[in-house]
Image (cartoon, rainbow, N blue to C red; front, side, top):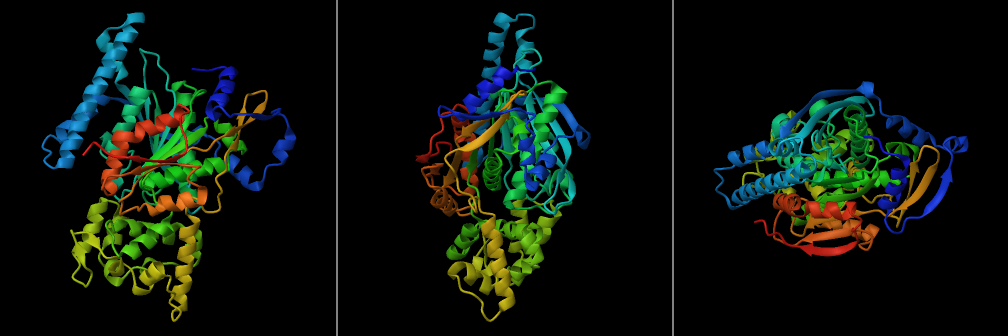
Length: 538
């Protein structure tokens, strides 16, 4: 499907909203603009170029959404806990809703195009494309890597309904490689992937879900956990590859498509970082070449301020999910350039009991889910106090000097080597905050290439943050930090009021409110401010 240049002009007005203003126009042959490109921008222009020879389509097949949801219902038929029963009822309701959607849509299509049977049309509406793509990228260490991603898309051969907008999904924390988005048969992040399939089916979205570095095709690499700029750059690279592949291989050009990036937990932080990265470079040539603008981010319970999160753990002296600080410091020590140059090691900061428990070994094996990594702590014969098989005190997990440094700001002046390493770690945590060295402006320039000229428009940044007030894994302190630095009148914050911890906040986000928050951005109904939300799911 090829669209004319006029639709690009319409898109430009639509994306920016009512306050859009045309600021400049220049010919594509204007060499002075090219001469003004900085070396950094020139490097990014080269980095984001699409090279079809550098991708491998590992799988490009179809599946029936109701079949996959039926499997999920059957697998959970013996649910007995209140939460599992609620999830089972949700999937049953979704199954009925999507079946009704397919039948209703088929009736409408058959009324004007009776060439195919109702059954055939309904079946085709439910048939989704599923592609696994390997592609070249640059790792956190600057070296070439093969990365992987999942792309879900509507096929619509009979109905001729083209994909509209694009969802860039950033996955939550995993430690088992089989949980990655590209795991076959929806065995990995199956809830998120099935939700992606629902969006593709009922909304005609293209859904792009990259495996983070360290999983999938790059499983032998270290994961740059919460290394903000690296993960943001890699997500946009995946988006660019997916859009170009789909346009060329499936003949659709998203000339009217907008991108919303979304995620929960680690994915929330990555989604926000990805949108920030886009805004920072919104007037760069490589952004112009991608054509489809990222118009907003919907983020839930993300660690946008790793330093505030670590301080919270120490102030409360409690780790309800010990794998979280383990991964956080692993990401800093093993993939952050400043940390590597300073020789930071995990045993500089964690207690001997914590290090010797085997938790880091299980994380590195990438065959254990997060809870099983934490089970290593329950097997300790030492002095660490472990409750509920996994929960520990922060004062037991960290060395005494480290715990006091982050809890009270007390510096180990009698140990200058450790003090230096603590200061370097603090610097690494600070520079990976969402708002570090970035002032959120009321609008950003966005260039669009019309073929004969380039237009520059003003776009309003649209960050939506959904966060649990009682989350002990990723505390609300993260939102307070973002609001203090960017202003609560410049972002949208939805406070989750229920006394739920991290996991249940995620369920409510994905199953209850996610779609509405995405639509607010895509439908130009987004507005900043702080509001409250209560779940009716559990």
